[in-house]
Length: 397
Image (cartoon, rainbow, N blue to C red):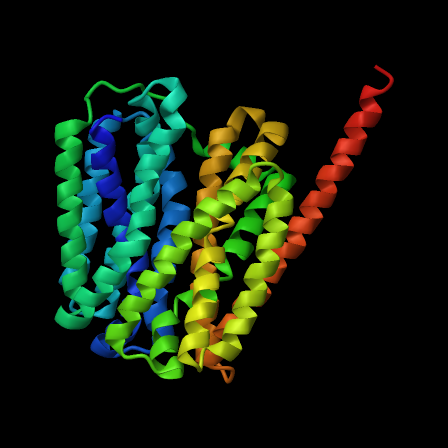
């Protein structure tokens, strides 16, 4: 594998860290900026919405730009967003800084995946893309706990300044190692994206992604306050718990990929059922340290185990219902993941602010995931119906 992939992975590591590190810093941010926990949780929602709506538009607008200059420009935007977050004097400035970083996020992974595939022979493209995305996984395991520790000891602004330094390292690596001559794929305009969104079966799949994946974020966004106020862990212990959670995510992601290879719909149905059950159980175990840790390990393993299956299923559906726009459908599913994060964080904040309170966020998240399960079963039934209809048409021929 060429060294250029390392530069892409470092950049992905920085971007992954800045997306999720706020979860561990939520109580610190809320206290310092004198806002409520739900208001602080909007920092997560705004970022995810920036990725959801910014990525498709910016991808269409920048489709004709050369790949390497575009990648460097995106890293510059990411660094600027985190620097602004690192010097934010108030809540409004922090939100604006998060939006800037989010715009860079969505387009980076779309362009980065194309570049990674272009750097290696055709039979190694999947491995190259996986290596780039490994930066995102490693960020969840190590970057988020480390960023949380930095924020707890030196202030949350120091975390964003450290992330911007990581972005500088990634940008320098891109400048030095990524070749200037790269293939230029055809630009996917907004019209193509709208046509994909007009496909009912793909819309159903995007809804499955948003509900099934996003349900965990109703509770995960407020995990640090839950662990501190309900479980009774100190703020220093929370960063260690996030290491456990991140390790479980990494394992679950690999296992989920293997389960989804043969039949993604069946795998997703089982994973969603287990995920909803664990979230509901966490409602009762959160008050005791050892049971809470055991439940959290299961929650982390299941939170991202559905990602490979969701992405594979959308690709399979696009091949049948929108064969000329498979890549666009895949990119829109990434937007659906982030829409789920935004919705989960927002509704989690509403639960915290209501009479139900912080302790109810896990079981409410479980209801979201059960909604994803119901839509998965519906989509599977439609697949079987389409299959029977195809067999009936084929028999006379």
